[in-house]
Length: 184
Image 1 (cartoon, rainbow, N blue to C red):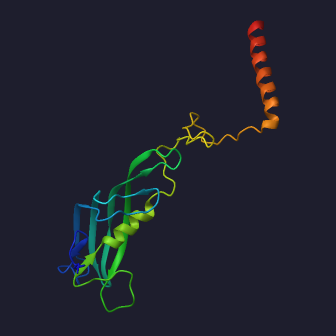
Image 2 (cartoon, helix red, strand yellow; image 1 turned 180 degrees about the vertical axis):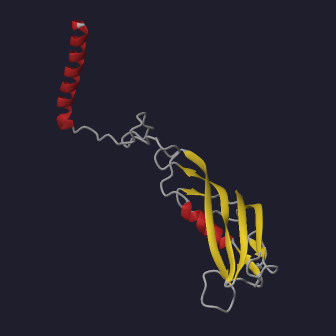
Image 3 (tube, rainbow, N blue to C red; image 1 turned 90 degrees about the vertical axis):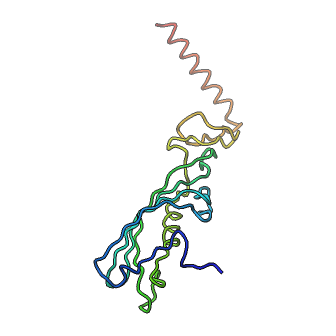
């Protein structure tokens, strides 16, 4: 059976428990224990996660605040190219002393386990529709090839019944261009 009071996300707080005003800061880098995220992008298992954490003792428990930096991998939602981009989140949560009202997070044997807190913050900040770059035009729905225009707006195919008119307008605009060159 896995001991929940050990691991890279578990920090001892015995020295600041029930001592309001006491504070400790920790900065460390760990490997992500499992894949975080299930959509188009996710933080890969074994990826590096940088944590900067501040532990502050308050009357109700231990206030945890900090930042987490990682990198997510996946596919651009427009052109399906592989992407890898950084994600940075801030978090803050109160780990209450045991025996009080029902709390989301609670101290366990003078330790705090940050894994759920950090994982939830990162997963909720992952983009729903990630893009490789803001101006990515995406794929052409008809051919499946990468579009060359940067508008990103899908061009509807011309109805075959109106194709003759399209050819007529193209012919007229070409003849107008020739005529304007001849006049100049």
